[in-house]
Every structure is written in C-alpha cells, then in structure tokens.
Image (cartoon, rainbow, N blue to C red; front, side):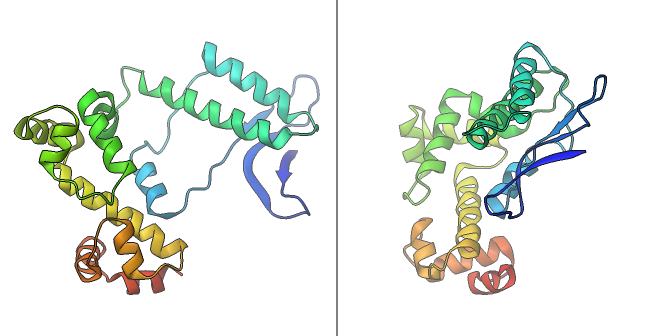
Length: 219
C-alpha cells in the first residue's frame, strides 16, 4: 500500500515523503522522499553527486528517520510543513554522513568550500555574479596574493576563477531564459553583462546556440 500526500483540491502528488507498507505487525515499511530539481542549476548540483549513495542509519539519521516515520503516520494540522522540514533534515544528515566516509569520492567543490579562502571566494561569486569580478579583486577579498589565489582556486575547484564565474553566469542565465519572460538584455544585466551582444556571444560559446534559440527550445 502506498500512502502519499496530495496538494489541496485533489491535485497531483507532491514530491514529499511517501510510505509503503500495510501497517500490520511485522510488516516492512518504506519511506520514500523525492525532490524535483529542474533547470541548469539543478543539473549542476546533480552532476556533483554520485548516482547512488547508500548511507546506513547512524545515531543522528536514525533519530530523524524515526521522527519522519512517526509524522508520516499522523494526519494533523501542519503536517506538510513538518514533513518537508524533516525530509530536508534527513537528506542533509545523509549527505553529511556520506561525505565523511573515508571511501567517498568527494567532488572538487566540497574540498573548495572547506577551504576558508576559496570557499569565501565561491560564496562571493554565487551571491553576486553580476559584480565586475577580477582575479585581483577576489584575491583581495580573501586576503591572498593574486598569483597564490589563482593557483589555489584552480587546484581546488578544477578551473580558473573567471572561467568558473562565466560557467556559473551561463547556468543562471539558462534558467532565467527558461523560467522567466525577461528580455535577453535584462538577463544579460542580471548575470553581469552590460552588453547584450557580448552576453549572447558568451552564451552561444557555452551552450552552442544563442539565448533566443535556447529559450524557444526549452519552452
């Protein structure tokens, strides 16, 4: 038997926890949680993770799973809000447990975020991609020399700072073109290009088609 939450008004099932089992003594009950990630930012995240990670329940995850299982069995006010947050908690705890295992092949971004200087630089790039960043400006932000910063960033992240920035800008732009009605010029400014033509050239170099063609293909 599958018990699933649905949107108000009898709509399609949400991507939240679902339970499988008949509830009889001795029965096995499975809880499945699903996340719907769409767009290039979502793809970028999934590319960083393994196709499958098996994480046995530990002291922290077991307690969270027990709470989640108990809440799924209830039908009380506020259940959706509690389930969503418990599912987020279980996911973060599981990822944390997986990352700390010696045999885990951690992606480059994990090592980079753990580095105080490079992690700080990445946060600056993510939070303000439209800023006119230079390698020297980023180095100054994190208190390193330009040469040392560029070398360390490239070593940990796997590509130079401005190459990473361009890739991140194109990722954001692709989702803006997909999910909004903003003009190409507006999207260009949002991701740090004052000149729409320069943005279009950069986007085509990264995606193989112009922003307008990309928008028509994904709609």
